[in-house]
Length: 63
Image (cartoon, rainbow, N blue to C red; front, side, top):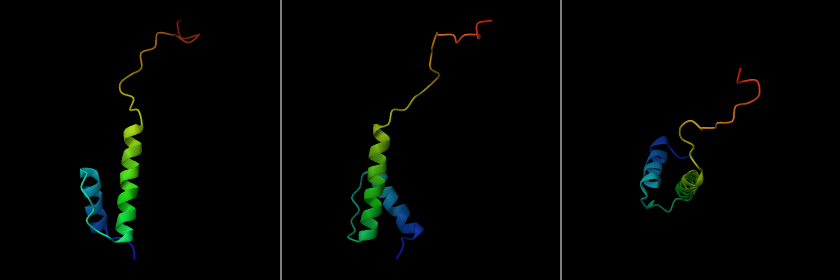
C-alpha cells in the first residue's frame, strides 16, 4: 500500500521540524528516514552566495 499525500505531508512536517514519527508502520518509517537523510545531506553541502570576485581577466576580455 502506498502512502497517501496526507500521510506523506504529516511525515514531512515531522521530519523537517525535528519531531519523532510516532508510528511503527514500515512504509512511514522508511519515508521518514529517507527525508531525514536527504536533509542531513543538504546541511553538508556548501551554499555559494553572491557573485564570486575574481580579478583575473581572461585573455581577450581586456580590450
